[in-house]
Amino acid sequence: MVDVAKAVGADAVAHGCTGKGNDQVRFELTFFALNPELNVVAPWREWDITGREDAIEYAKKHNVPVPVTKKSIYSRDRNLWHLSHEGDILEDPANEPKKDMYMMTVDPEDAPNEPEYLEIGIVSGVPVSLDGKELSPATLLAQLNEIGGRHGVGRIDMVENRLVGMKSRGIYETPGGTILFTAVRELETLTLDRETMQFKDTMALKYAELVYAGRWFDPLRESMDAFMENITKDTTGSVRLKLYKGSVSVVGRKSPYSLYREDISSFESGEIYNQADAAGFIRLYGLPMRVRAMLEKGL
Image 1 (cartoon, rainbow, N blue to C red):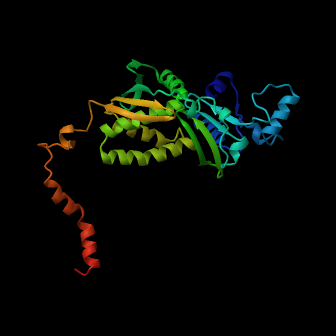
Image 2: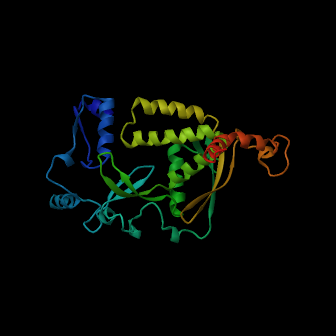
Image 3: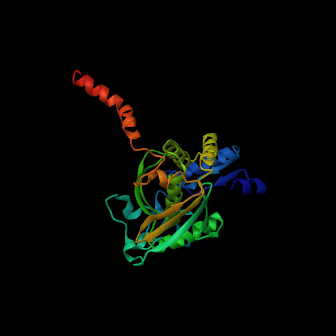
């Protein structure tokens, strides 16, 4: 939008976000970051239309076709990664979503009775292939949306805390995203050490918060990307998954950079790990607990 505004010489851009959501913040912070001189027009914050029923009446009065009715008045947003549903009966968090609301995924109860297996190839933390065939990111995600959707994968029902202060309930469909997240996360368990994984998890929460709050162009987000790229440079390999009636199960994983050593981890005897060494480790590791117990018992 900013590029188009510059190309046509416009001094303003517009968006259709309401005054209650997070998306208005995401749009406008991005406008500020890329061109702080642009003016922003946000009709939902200015006109007399106060809700979706008013908007439907306005559209009807002016012969503007819209894909919703007062009987099905969901607010939906869609991109390659997900489809979200809000409004209508979902505004009461106690209500179960209607079966016909979903558009990307079948009901898990109606999904195929046979599981489907697939293998995701990953290079430096980035998914690059499906069942050995290299695909562009967009094509890979689109195919996984289709595959996961027919198995009822990726339905998320949640109450979230909006940036503007209120809580909201939404239903998300993200079959491809669920599959990719599961695959990458699982490969990391092979290639990252414990401390790095724990710190990455801590950073992931902050990263998600920045993106959720519209701070994509924040210097902190860019710096975190550089860190993530470094620690996942060896997260290369493949993960085999099983899709079945709404679930994604990991059934295999392998990597040339795996930190897993069967000769160390095996329950059978091994030369590298001497089980007798564990006794000394446990005594030292548990020393603070022993000291406290001695104090409490007057020893």
